[in-house]
Amino acid sequence: MRGEFETIAACFAGLASSVPGAFGLVDDGALLEVAAGRQLVVTMDTLVAGVHFLAEDPAASIAKKLLRVNLSDLAAMGAKPESYALSAAFAPGTRDDWVDAFAGGLREDQAAFSLGLLGGDTVSTPGPATFTACAFGSVPKGKILRREGARVGDVIYVSGTLGDGAFGLDACRGDLNWLDPSLLRYLQDRYRLPDPRVGLGQELLGVASACLDVSDGLVADLGHLARASGLGAKVESSALPLSEAASKVIAEDAALFAKVFAGGDDYELLFTAAEDAAGALKALSRRLGVPITRIGQIVEQPGVRLLDRDGADLPAAEGGWTHF
Image 1 (cartoon, one colour):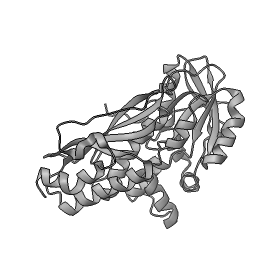
Image 2: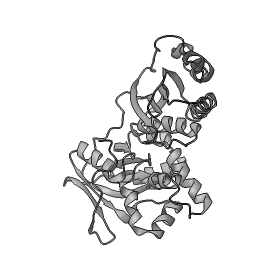
Image 3: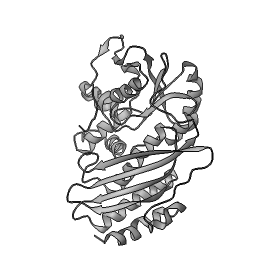
Image 4: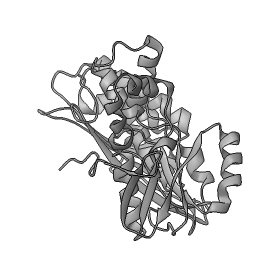
C-alpha cells in the first residue's frame, strides 16, 4: 500500500475540492462556516469490519455505507448535508486498488448527496479495518428535529419499508439463496447501501414533532423516542410496511417477522406528527416518491406495545441492536 501522504494525495485530496475550508487537505485543520440564520448539526458513526460490514463486501459499498449512515442521522434532525471528516484505519495487507475503490465510492456519494470531504486521518491498524465519519449539516436556526417533542395522540409514521436491513445481512451471508435473484440483490443492496432520507428529513421541519432514524430496530428506536418525550407508544403490527422481498422471506418462515420490528440497519425515518398533518404528509410522500406509512400512536403509558390485528399484545424484542 502507498505511504500515508501519497494515499491522501492520490485518493482523498480530490474529494475535498468542493470545500474551500478543507485547504486541499494540506493543513492541520479545516475551517467551517455556516450561512447566516442557520445552525451546525454534527454527527459521527463508525463502521468496523465483522460488526457493521462483512470483510468481503466491496470497498465502494463500505465507503458509501459509512457516508449514508451518517447522512441518515442528519436526515433525522432535518439537516442539509454540508461536509464530513474521515478517519480511515486500514487493515494489514490492504491493496492500493482497494483504497482507490473505497475513495471512488466516497466520490460517487459526495456527488449524489452534495457534500465534500473536510479532512481527517489515515492510519494502519493491526486489527479489523475501521472507518469513522463525522458529518456536518445545517438547519434553519431553532428548527432542528429532535427525539423529544412527541405528544399524546400524535401519530407514528415510518418512511420506506422495514426489515430489509436485517434480511439483507442474511442475504449477504448466503442464508437466503433460495430467493429470486432480483429479490436477493435487492436485500443485499438494502444492507450494504441504505437510502438516507435526506430530502424527507428537511421537509419534516415544522411538520414532525419528534424524529429519529431506525438503525437499531423499530421497537428499540421507538422506545428511545418515546422515553425522550416521557411517553409511550402503541404500534399496529399489521401496518408495518414490507417490501416484496421481506414479504417472501416471512411467508417462508413466519417466525422471521420478528426481524421487521427488532432487526436494525433499515435507516428509515421514524417520526411523530399531529393527526391533522396526515394530508400534508400524503402530499409530501407523493412529491418525494418516498412511502410514508402510519404505524401507530403516541400514548401516555410508558413503553412500546406491539399489537396484533385483534389489538392483543405481541411479544416485542426489548433491546434491538446494542454494542454492549
